[in-house]
Length: 246
Image 1: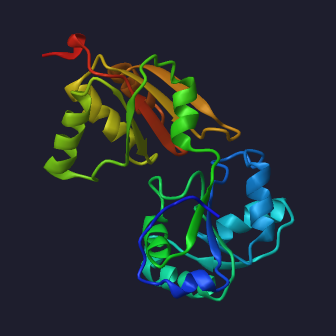
Image 2: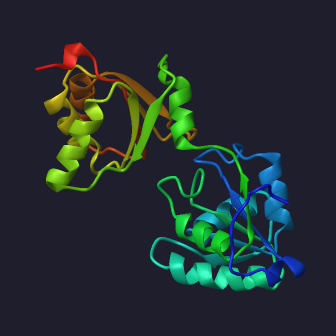
Image 3: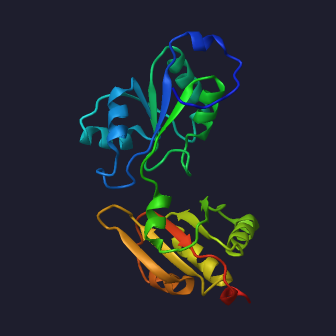
């Protein structure tokens, strides 16, 4: 039983057989990057809820795991969460996985977790890989704190304002970006802080894994020359320094 105190309107459930929701971290690329506990849970649960059933099937097939899958993604998470609550109420155990990494970290899952806990069921984390910790482990920063931002607003003054706020902080911050917008993001950073140091992780843990380190302006020049950029990106932007001042 998880040691997590919570008030709930449903007291009768504690006298019944209750299912448990497991939030399971999965690989961000290399299929070997999964814990023994995660594999055990995926084998033992009754149902696996996942962001994309096709994507999750590749992982399950690799480890010869056969389970009933239900789709739980950004567009149907609320309705799917209601269905998962019913399964838990029947005493079934459910695991939730996102396409890669740790669920709820710039991935679906928060609505599901909130509702399941509100209804009085246990939510158990099965920790593992995350793109954020993967990048931070090789970023070489000595500070003890950093901000996880994930994806910035897509456009407009809101995006510019948020980026300016982050660049003024005296701590590093982590951004995620797609291959279609990575050059634009570096242009924005270089416009505000061209001498800010940035570490970029592309396709981390995958075959074409790549890490780039340098000033934002330098990295912009490198990626701007590539005709066809592929892969998902994570960026670790160094803290504010007086050298960045106008």
